[in-house]
Length: 411
Ligand SMILES: Cc1cc2nc3c(=O)[nH]c(=O)nc-3n(C[C@H](O)[C@H](O)[C@H](O)COP(=O)(O)OP(=O)(O)OC[C@H]3O[C@@H](n4cnc5c(N)ncnc54)[C@H](O)[C@@H]3O)c2cc1C
Image: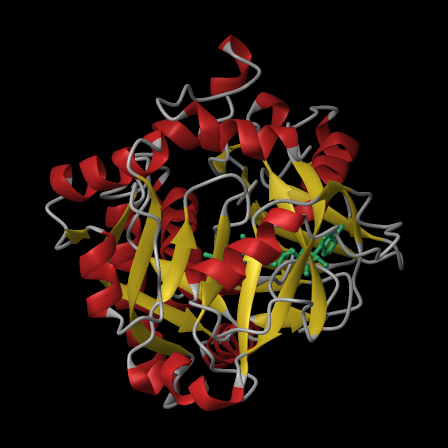
């Protein structure tokens, strides 16, 4: 086969947070890397754009917190390398009914992973936050020191800049339409819609909500990764209370383990506003979205009114922003070799299910390990393998059905 195209050690497809972190990690290891993106760099049409993402160690599953701790360190290392900040630390506060199974698993996971945490009853919560959070009597709060807000668009830009500084080649407006195995030379040929071809000894596919489409076109395999259109909302903090809800005043990132699961960040990116959103959305085609906002259920308005002691204007959000989740049935990531005829030449990383941003740096490190060494150091990828869907189409079995069901119900 004649090679008209450029030759690389690794081609990374998709320049969201995962692809950008992977490209940086590969370039740092001295690999010749190309990062290809279908739209403009830093576009708002995928999952990694916007003004804030939460980082927290608390998960009901016990296999994420070590990843978060490593990622937190890698976020800080990248900031030190570039010379500006994308990650602002806060505490993190989880809350929910005492008998909520997911929240119980969060507490268990804090214990088993030796994370610092304190469980507070509703009186203690009221005192700790000076009335900013008000929980029903049968609820508890879990306060942990590792939380924070990451600026997503700025963070993606940071990793792309660091990758370029280490010699990576970045191309946007480059739509990958196919990948073929190169049987003579080994490795893969990556074909784009404008007729270009790139050769890579290895390939990393991090195409977010487009994962199912591209992998199906390339291999015929249908990955259980469903794009969801989701909407985040910004709400006005009442005038006399605006300072209290700011990051600088110690207000935490937060999540509520009830139906629906609600999460948010302190007042930070837009003065006087606070982000409060529902985890979930409606299925969409990433190439043909209606852009209709998700419906806010009545219970969300009353949750906001009651949980923040009436200090937030709960009648309507000030404005909303759209984004996409890439949901797996169990809410766990997919990080694996594609296998089949491609063996270990293609690594896929997707299905980040609405909680992947914080993990970008550690996922980038794991992907670089898989490509360079064939295995990931200090990372247990069992729960992220594709083979989990062979035995059970719903993937990993969870103890805390209510949260998994809420993911699945939203599909
Ligand atoms: C509203 C919202 C809130 C969230 N909140 C949090 C949070 O608080 N904390 C957290 O940790 N996570 C959060 N997440 C999840 C997190 O943002 C995502 O898990 C993460 O951004 C996924 O990144 P990605 O790189 O996999 O996908 P993307 O960012 O979508 O990147 C994939 C890229 O691949 C490109 N691409 C696709 N197909 C092709 C092709 N054929 N050729 C070339 N390029 C292609 C796309 O254009 C895109 O740029 C949230 C997500 C949303 C939507």
